[in-house]
Image (cartoon, rainbow, N blue to C red; front, side, top):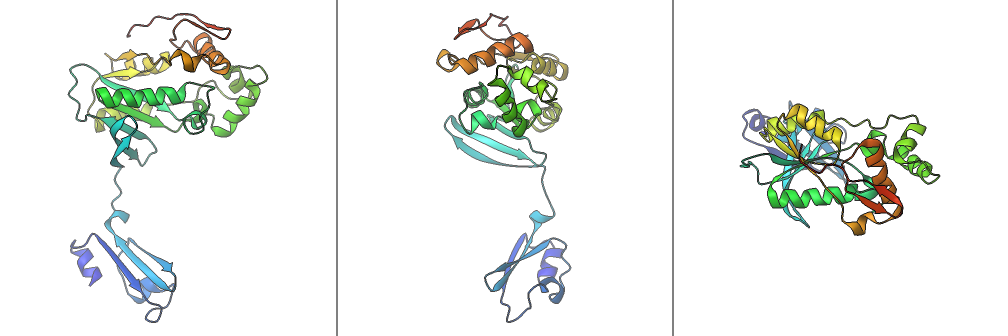
Length: 267
């Protein structure tokens, strides 16, 4: 009966509980002579649970759900390739550019509250902005500019001896930045139907990437407030991003680390 129903496309999911009195364990599919390719069986106490589901054979490229957040209700979309998107007000009806944040994971700040960097603040601010104005935050698993959490922690140890973030990565044998944002182009263009973006970023390399893929792209800066920046470790971090990575940062003296004013216009 299950075979005929499934082959006739009359059933999406089926759950059968089988007592071992009637069927021996480890021989469910054989003894029942099932022709279904996508089925699974599990031991549940002394019984056997047999499952058939169309979800086992038809796997979408992403799944999504509404997600209430501290910033308001957003949509969360998880791709089978790893990217996570948080978005609001789609389909977009922006006259100009759609606000977009391309954000790389930072477990230390986003989960454990580290104040060595401004990553957690930038993510939170981007989610707030997208909720209020519409747009997309694309979250990528690229910890420590792509060196991974283990070497990121090693780099922290080197930073405590006096090296900055760039020097620490190089000392561990890494490039300064391994990150890649190419998968975001397909997601933004094909799945969200975006032709032009306003990139929420201070990173000139990300801005150049945006302009290469969305020719009339603009950008908007994300500056943490003074009470967040005025701690020694984040001050040095902001100074390094400006001095060695050319990030566009405001003029400020963060406990001895002087960050000079950069051009703060859309490009």
